[in-house]
Figure 1 (tube, rainbow, N blue to C red):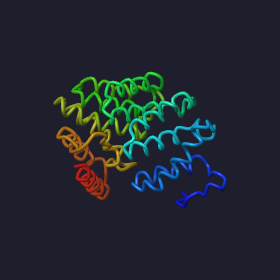
Figure 2: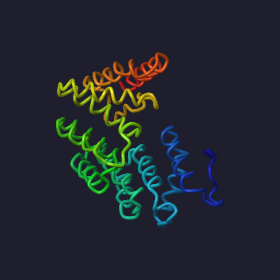
Figure 3: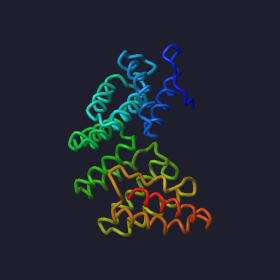
Figure 4: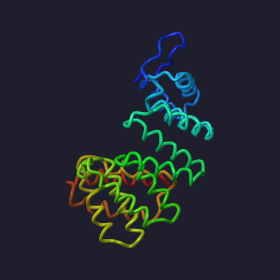
Length: 253
C-alpha cells in the first residue's frame, strides 16, 4: 500500500488505495495525513464519481475519520448519503450496518437498532449486523433476545458453520451470553465450537469489543473457549492462543 501523499495534480489512484490509506492514517491517529485523503475522497463522493460513490469502503472510512476527530454528525451524514448511492447488494449492507454503529456510538440507540434490524431484514446473510444488534440488545438488558438474534444468524444457508470467521464470532458471543443466563450446557457447546475453529485462526482475534472493557460474563465465556481449546489444539497452538487472549483482554481494560 502506498503511504506517500498524492499530489493534487496527479491522477487519482484507485478507489481502494485512497480508502485504505485513509483507514491506515485514521487508525494511526495521524489526522493531518488522514485529512488529505478524506478531502480527496469526499470530493469524489460529493461529485458522485461512480468509482467511489458505488463502493462501501470510501463512505465508511470517510465516516470513520469524521467520527475519530469528533464530528459524529458529519459521519452520520456521510453514511446517510451513501445509503442511496451504494446499491450493489454486496456493498450496501456495509453502509447500513456502519451507520448503525456510528449512531450507537453517538448515543442514538433506537436509531442504531433500527439500522441493524434493517440490515438484517434486507441482507439476512450479513452476520456482522446480527453481532452488533445482539451487542446492543445485551447492553439494553435484552440478553434472551440477543441470544435469539445470534442463533438466527446461524440458520443462513450459505454460511459454512465450520469455517466462516463471522460464525466463530457468533459462537464466542453465544458462549458469553449463555454464561450470563447460566445456561452452562449451551455455553460449553458454543465454546467448544469456537475453540475448534481456532485450528484455522486466532480465536483471540474473534473477541471484538465494541463498547468498552470486557465484563465478567465475557471473561467466563472466554475461559470456556480456552478450556475447550485444550482438547482441540496442540500444546503450542493452545499456549499461543492463551497468551493472545490474555494480551487482548488486558488491552481492553
